[in-house]
Amino acid sequence: MKLAKAWGLSLALVLGACAGGPPVMTTGDRYNAVPETTDTYRLGSEDKIRIAIYNEPQLSGDYIVGSDGTIALPLIGDINIGGKSTSDAAIEIQNALSRGFLHNPRVAITMEIYRPIYIIGEVKLPGTYPYSPGISAWDAIAKGGGLTPRGKRGQIWIRKPGEQAETLYALKPSLRVYPGDTIRVPERFF
Image (tube, rainbow, N blue to C red):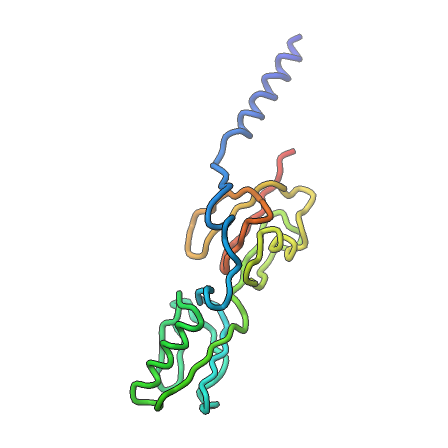
């Protein structure tokens, strides 16, 4: 009888400990997000873009957005394009070039490589992976080789770029990942 009471008390303590913890996000912008396009995607650090300036091949080329959101272009120097769409960044560059450098410049920007996502924890191949618009958390985990046998199947932690804290999310097919996110798959206890 004492053994049964001890077992029951131990089980109650373990289940009580499992019931606590941080809140799990089950709704919000990550669940309702529409896949991004190049018109809605916001440029940021580590994005690689191709800038084409019509009739100016020496000014055209590939550029990587710096950690401060800028790129260095011939003639105009550093220009901040962080947080802008590719079309807004093209207009910004056109305006800068038209201020005494080129007459009526025409600029086009295309995405070459999106900034990466980072996958750590209980996945078979943790590491850095390229972001692609509209990627779900399940897709990201698949890039990491899938869950290990110890990987928790119902929840993941996500840390946004530049933030210190992680947020716990319910792992649903609609859960979106954004560029620069760090995804951590926790270990399950049972």
